[in-house]
Image (tube, rainbow, N blue to C red; front, side, top):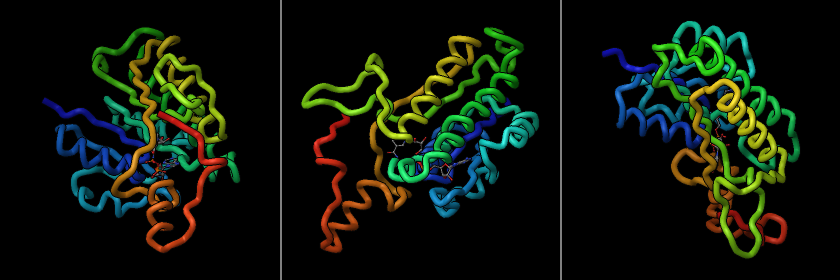
Length: 227
Ligand SMILES: NC(=O)c1ccc[n+]([C@@H]2O[C@H](COP(=O)([O-])OP(=O)(O)OC[C@H]3O[C@@H](n4cnc5c(N)ncnc54)[C@H](O)[C@@H]3O)[C@@H](O)[C@H]2O)c1
């Protein structure tokens, strides 16, 4: 039986590179990693598996390029991690966040729709098991009060250009499910930490500062909660 071709976007970043290693251990799918290699992407994150994957350097904002990629490979599954992901950068320069997180996600959805479906609610036979997995964040839900937790029923209340761009992408993904019946799944996880994480992120920053005896930075009054 032919193995499925899986497109993993943002696979040279923190979570994407960990996922690539996981999926190589747990499936026989043929892995294609698409990454623009921004400051956040690093091929060293994929060094251990470089002979087991097909790496493609490219930008999800480049629609023509993405269309050609889908025409050539007819991916069965798309796991979409690629994003501008650092809140602080979204405050100093929101434009890239709007482009990559919103327009880039739209480009992928449009290519997936054209590849997998003959029309609304009409999946082609060869794509009956296809899936688009959209990796989003719990930051779309905003901030918690003293108590409580976020659920899938919680109203969206994004507070930064980063979370607003991710919330926008979630809505576009949702619309492709409701309008066209595209097989999508969206996840809204909380903060991750671990190997390959960029040093700009919260936990690496705190560890670095603590080790070097410097003051530990806090956001706002330090009382914001997300669960
Ligand atoms: N890190 C977390 O704690 C966390 C929590 C919740 C959700 N998420 C989401 O998970 C996903 C991955 O997060 P991460 O922390 O691994 O991010 P990251 O910044 O480490 O990696 C993002 C990757 O996407 C690539 N990329 C950026 N723009 C691109 C473009 N236009 N075209 C192609 N590739 C591009 C980068 O080069 C990089 O390799 C993101 O969608 C993020 O919103 C992350």
